[in-house]
Length: 265
Image (cartoon, rainbow, N blue to C red; front, side, top):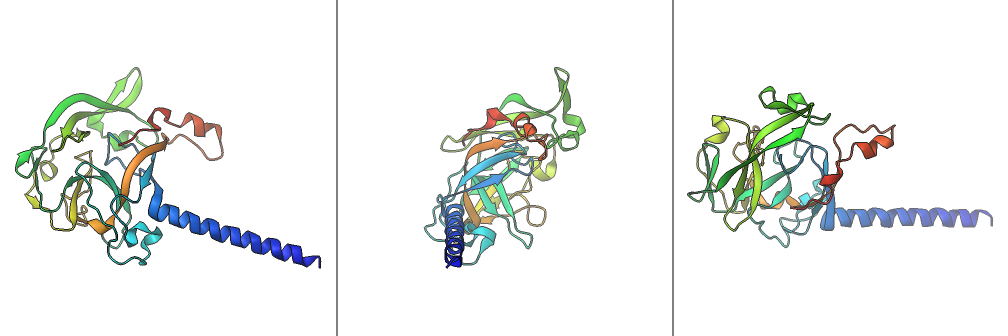
């Protein structure tokens, strides 16, 4: 008789864990998930070490909405096209597929070209206005090597990275900041791209340091099928400069970039 409560408790625990796993699966697949920024391709809006919430319902659902790309959903269900300017998380093409974040620049049928660093969308230059330099302090997750020697500077005795910054405005009024690191013909002057049906053209805001739709795999991403879109970036919920150590809990606070928390898109 003494074993019966113990067996019942074990079953209850297993039942609870199963329900919890199912809840997390549904939440992350269909409602909201998290994403951490691993690279500098979306500077200045996104820094390495930013943590985002990504909403999953915006563009419909496919196998790439599910953890590990489980092939449980056929094609694209409840599909909706993104808007130009949306910042999206998607599954990259190729055998080493992984989650990536970029900005939507072109929709199906659009023509896109880059001339002298300016985006030409459907034959018209996208307005690009020079604004104040983007200045980013050097930290463990963005050091001098990532910055590049030609962009290193010092402000108030602290090492910083300084990039030329511009305000770009798409048709419809969506505006955002982009960076220009210099003259790179392979990135600043391209052929004319025509976005195929069912695909989008994506670019990083750090225009000279982004492997995106301007380049075919394996150098870039090429056009991205809509069914690979996983969701839209919604808000930054945490950010760290890389100085934290797991064995020193107090550094979790000192490493946080509190001013970035709550920034939307």
